[in-house]
Length: 188
Image (tube, rainbow, N blue to C red):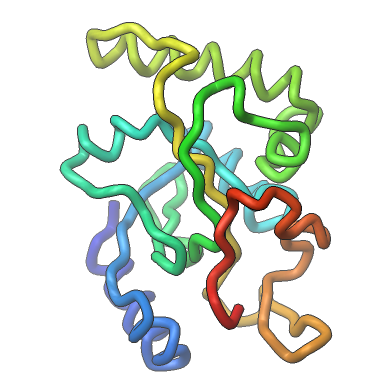
């Protein structure tokens, strides 16, 4: 990852959005998936507006020496070459297991045909592959972080909602907070 370019992107965002940074000043620099090709494909879906959620095995955060994200936290998403492209802000988080994914979440994750069936099929293959690469097996009972996010930066990918808050174009399609276990960012 190009950490220096990510720091410059963060500085520009912090100058333009000081309140968001004061509320949650930490950020991480990451990419989607386990290959450059997958990172590029998933980032494309984020930028196009169809991907506004992701799911990660909770222990992956431990493997990376990180704590779980929190509502309001930021992460800089890089492309497959490690170039930072967008800053994402976590707006909803919950812990669950494989069977806790629902059709709304699968659709918000924006992959394949957007169905829960394809979400289960593709994530099962992904986690079996990535966990095997780490020398362990995957189980449907493993803890998963279900996360919804919005693009926070760069400018030009956002539009105001009906009360003047800024959200990315196409974000969540109004599907918002139907699940009471999801926690929205206060004031967003």
